Image 1 (cartoon, rainbow, N blue to C red):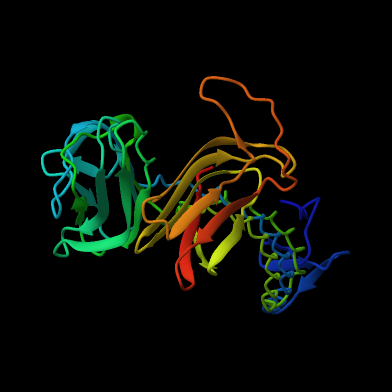
Image 2 (cartoon, rainbow, N blue to C red):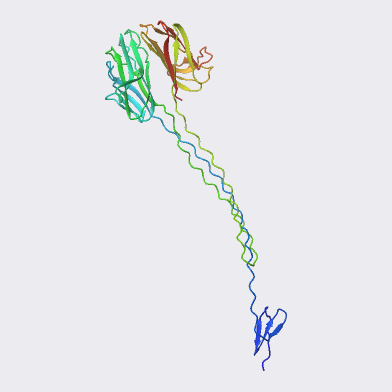
Length: 385
């Protein structure tokens, strides 16, 4: 007959049956069960989940790129051929043309300007030395607007064939366009059939609207924040509530702004009111720059004109450049008696002289008003560097 053989390594509540009898292991011994086995106890509730870790910090933003540069419109005409236009007609000149955007038509003397821009127009003519007892006056016109005169007029007068021509006084105008516009230089008076001294003649057009800088490039993206550490596992039991979300990382700092574009050059203009008799007048500019300058007075029987191209450094050293002055001696109502003494220089040579002027950035003129009332004389300058 077989013997009862309990398992050698029983587990808690394990049941062993032999024949019609059963035993249950209570953790210490095998206990006989006379009735049916009891039902298993219910499982314990799940333990609560651990809390979530905090979010990492956001990286810093990259720096903005620098602003860009925009070139201005311009045109320069150095004529080498053409004739003096009769009164009321346009000067038609040909020669060397350098330009950006602006165009010149040598068949009709017209210059085409772009829409929605502001321009400075300058022109200067000189009569040939072979011409005597001659005068020309000229002024810019807006052809597109019906040949309307714009700006101040310039003039040249020669009273003797043995005298040099009067140096080129400047006809100048400022014009702002709304559409594509044609302009030209018109003769408002001429009694000469002679020729021009082309080496002393020029037409200049320059856009004076400021430069617009392009937008800087975008900064690089900031680095990602580090991940929060994982929460610890909850204990077993009943299902716990979800842990609260970690706080968001702080935002990175913004990149620095790009630099602005360069400003454009704008003419500075003014005027002097001359009392009758002798007058000393002046204007002052900032040192360390280069300029184109001019003085213009035009009254009945009186014209004074002066222009210069100069470069200044410090106010206690000379100004290097070239200047020209002229007045209408036959009329005599305005007489140019002196021009700035600090401007030195000879073409093709080096100067070392030092004029006796303490503030060389102040340009002084002597003008005698021989009319019977006060008169106005205009001046101006534009920085070119």
